[in-house]
Length: 95
Image 1 (cartoon, rainbow, N blue to C red):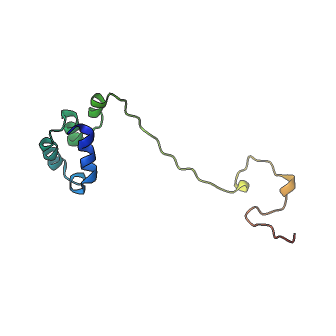
Image 2 (image 1 turned 180 degrees about the vertical axis):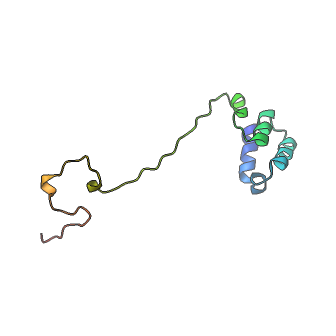
């Protein structure tokens, strides 16, 4: 099995995914996993796989976007057409 196939097998088997690092090392040895995959499993450092895959590791920064009402933003100038309207309340059909 190559590294991708081994990673797929681990992903499909909950007992592999939740195994201790020692047990996972044994499983990987039984599967004839590459040295870089065994080192990654042992240390948790994914950089060992960089050489095997020939790619750079890209980290993603997650940010949380929070919405709000326009009136919460102090920078904006008031809109004369909407002056006095509450944007959260829909206007009635008769007005």
